[in-house]
Amino acid sequence: MQRKSNELLAGYCQFRPRFGRVRENLEGVIRALRQVRADLIVLPELPFTGYHFRDRSEALALAEDPRDSDTVAALARLCKRKRMHLVTGFAERRRDRVFNSALLIGPQGLRHVYRKLHLFKDEKSCFDPGDIDLSVQTVNDFRIGMMVCFDWAFPEVARTLALKGAQLLCHPANLVLAHCQQAMLTRSLENAVYAVTANRTGADRRPHGVLRFTGGSQITAPGGRLLHRAPAARAKIHVTALDMSAAGNKWLTPRNHLLRDRRPEFYLA
Ligand code: ACM
Image 1: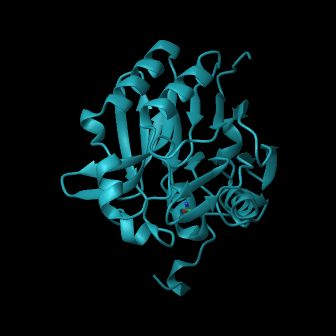
Image 2 (image 1 turned 60 degrees about the vertical axis):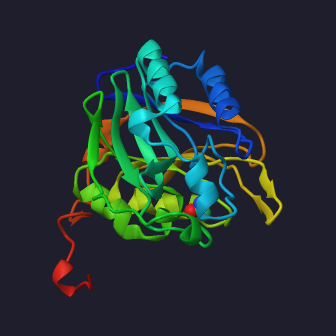
């Protein structure tokens, strides 16, 4: 695919991680991305460990410190070889704390860590809540923001990233409810941003219960347009050229600016 100067080749890799098989999941991702040409690929939430932890000690045991992680080192080598960036979910250990994080990794290695702010259901028993400000990073001169799965239910996250200049929301997910895909159309509409939601398929079958995930990874565009949606139950990689200049136009009508017309003095914090 030929890229123009205002375009970013961005996409996702949807697949079915096997719980606890970090090495096998990592090798599967590296194999799957071998032939892919992209500037930026988004992977699901917790794509190497799996999602349905029994408890906090199990999450801590499988988590890695990204500054000293074989998984991150292998992904950085992949990024260097392919001259691309990855945004990936990651079980992040920091001493005795453990976060459900997203990492930005590029050809030079780890670039940024975002720790999920809004933990979903039993994640509250397994992870520490995020403690790092939402921020915007540059990839090929374009501005991206990161959020993780259930952050979709808090429009403040996408809004804050848009106010900080994000043109593209990178959104690793392990979705179990049916609402997110629709909600992300609205996040794209109300902020005039692109969003890549990378979900997983299959189920985590654990002794303490089964969790099924809904696939349907998607790419949404300013105007609330759905550019692409994956099937619910099949592995899929999709890359598309995003005209990033479209995310610079925040006028919904000639007289309505999505960011400047806000009335924060009337909003609750
Ligand atoms: C979720 O936040 N993984 C539903």
